[in-house]
Length: 146
Image (tube, rainbow, N blue to C red):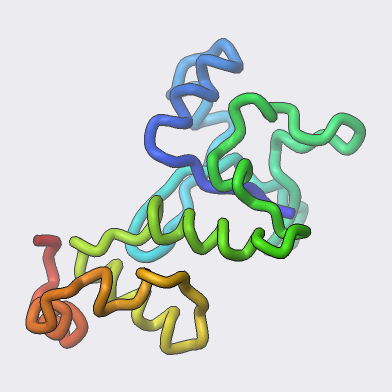
């Protein structure tokens, strides 16, 4: 089940929706998670002693308690639809991966090498079209964002 990542500015919208400050929201209901060298916020996951669990805003009877302000990743997640996976890949490419950050690119390259899927336009040579720059990123010659 889990929870989805917020796109930029969405945590503020959720705080407003819930009638609380962003700091209060973050302390009570959000957690940080990292993907491709990017730290993102998401609703806390109630793990109950497991590495997985349900979203803190999920109600067994009503479903999503923050439906009108839920994270973009949750809004596009349609795992039961044939295009659900493509929507998740779109979110990853447009809101998580940073082609200007060498570490993000290296982690994404590892993801692809391990069999991770992408969309057309999500290939390394497309994201970083300058071959020399891409090579420097991948061989750790460049370690800081451009």
